[in-house]
Length: 221
Image 1 (spheres, rainbow, N blue to C red):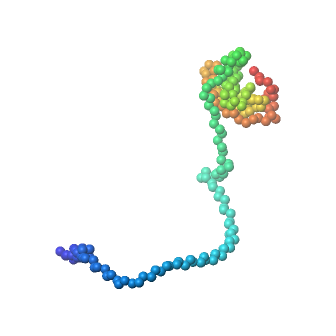
Image 2 (cartoon, rainbow, N blue to C red):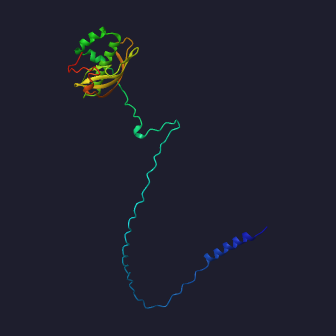
């Protein structure tokens, strides 16, 4: 068995121990000398002259970036941000049916008498129109609707117990506005059970006659 490496480590440890345990030599005291106080004055460096301003180099003309026409795998050109279609605003869902209160008002006595005399489809439309005016009044205090026409701008779609009026119109303060609504009635078609709507922009006066919108100012029963 070789003792080379352990012996070297042992010697190294002994040498370190000797260095730490050996007495330190007494420092020699030099003979006294006449001391002279010397004051060191730091020389203030002179400021360097300013470097001459570098003249601006003319900007290199940059070539216009090539326009990338990204084509999706289907083969049609991807629409630019300005061409991305904007989804239409959501319909307003009625939280409470208001046509019952409107018909219960004493001023609606004539309407209550006329509704049973109307045909099925017309009675459904009139009930939904009454609901539309009540919802518009509750939705915005700036609106004062006095007349609603379900088929003002487009024909209505009537199913078993629902009326869809995508081209309706309503009048408020002598001005006609675009209206869209979805109206659901009870099974006996006597009351509105669900309603949602969307009020649109004004209809120009020049188009009133084209859509057969009454020009008269007085509310019609």
